Every structure is written in structure tokens, then in C-alpha cells.
Image 1 (cartoon, rainbow, N blue to C red):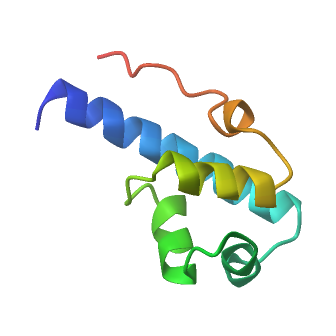
Image 2: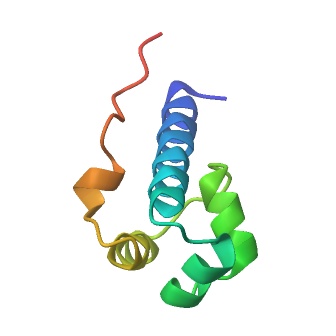
Length: 82
């Protein structure tokens, strides 16, 4: 695995945590978030675990459903330092 792959995995993991935290703060279930975004519940679960590479369109739909912005969902994600 390359350094770039590790960095991508780190970003996806942190993004997933931010999505989960925001969803839970709003009191939404994964099913409710799936309904609001048009993204399947299984994929919401994978996103929250950092196991799927999202498109910008998907990220925007999630941000909108969570009444936030993309920069907020990326808060706290820095380059992983080795």
C-alpha cells in the first residue's frame, strides 16, 4: 500500500466519523439519512466506517441532509504524518 493510499484511507475514515457524529447529533438513524440522501443504508454504513470512496455529489447530498457544509464534514482532517 502506498503513502497516497494510506492518506486516502485516513481521510475516508475521518470523514466517516464526522458524518456519523453529525448524524447522531441530529438524532437521525442511518435509514433516515439514507432516505434524505437517496444513498442506500448499506452505503451509509460503509461511508461511516470509511470503507467507500464517495463522489463529490454524494458528499454534497450528505452535507445537505445533515444541514451542514462540506468543509464542516472535513473539519479536523489533516494529512496523516508518519
